[in-house]
Figure 1 (spheres, helix red, strand yellow):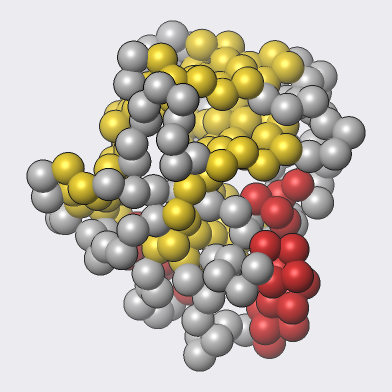
Figure 2: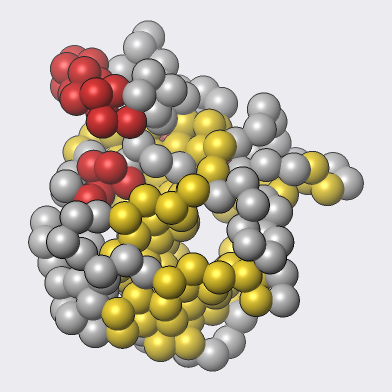
Length: 224
């Protein structure tokens, strides 16, 4: 259930030079937190311009709305200081990860499948009419190989999981990512992407009952 909500809850604002960047400031203004019933929430904080998350047998999401932007390349830096064990990200109830960054796209009924249109009623009842229609989730964790793609076990054809980093990547070191969101959307769904509406950050350790610690910074959308 928490991943269904995750698929609807997603981030960003502000413009810096020629890029649209997510502001990470003390007190995390502009961010909203989504916790889950009966699951301990994560601890989120700003640390020297980075956003940190500590998860202790818990799970929660931090998100904000996206500004209007047609810039297709998403870049960011992140690091894991303590990771959860490798899990199967395609299995419900056993899909912990140290950190995930999820990008949500506006719902487009003209390209939605029959299943997506039927499920839309449920999504809007949970997250409102402006909830994203499709999402791409970039994950640090899981037991799938780096670069692998899989349907979300919760979102089905409307959600795609991309494994960018695994437990084999070193802890305590910043890693830089650059992803062409528009090209990836076309590759997955075969059409031009609708506008990005939200982006969310999450960490999840409730299934393995472990502790994870992670940070992310310099999250920006820019041109090719």
